[in-house]
Image 1 (cartoon, rainbow, N blue to C red):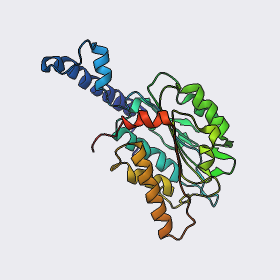
Image 2: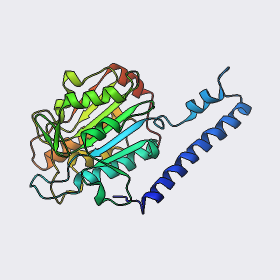
Image 3: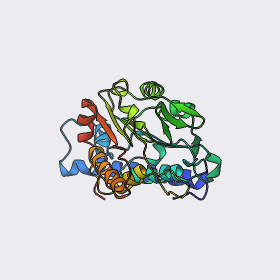
Image 4: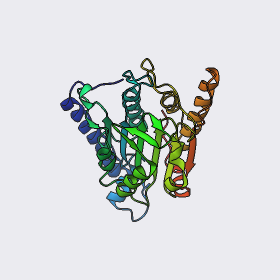
Length: 277
């Protein structure tokens, strides 16, 4: 797990990264007109938006909702996944300064700018302007919802917070790594602009939440899939295949990760691929 040396250093790197992206876009804005490639009548601001990385203006919340193993002992599996999912997202073009991270024990990770894992953070971590939303939540799950701190958060509660913070015309990606997380693909969660991937069916557990596990199995498969994936749909299929193979190899009851993609999300994400790595 990558950890910053201090909050000042973390903010400095984020600011430097933002400045570097802005500089690259401005340079393209200045030099492309000489090449005769810009569309007729396009303004400088239009051109800057067109040339920016496809996910640079998305709002992101990555949350580790628990820190206990299935035995009740402490585990770093969820926080390990949180930190490394953020690294993977940054590598495909998500802007560090637009990513909010949350943990049950933010004080245990000095140098990381972490919010507490809570309903309040779910209700504010995706606020503000943006061109899309991504919520990644890794935790334990129950047949009624997902664990966030001391609460069991239901699909209705997450739906309300996504609806309040994410514009209906922008794509929303929601990935839930938890037992029984298939409850989040029920019809009441579905919207035309939502892409929802879950670690299991609503009546199945997922695996890899022990005190010695580096990541939950589903999160490990997401991380394994990212470097080869061409976009979110490909990421989902690679992750599902990885989970099925891992569970079969261990003789486990298949968790059967679920995927639901609204028509608007499918159309929007088909034009927003991950860059070649």
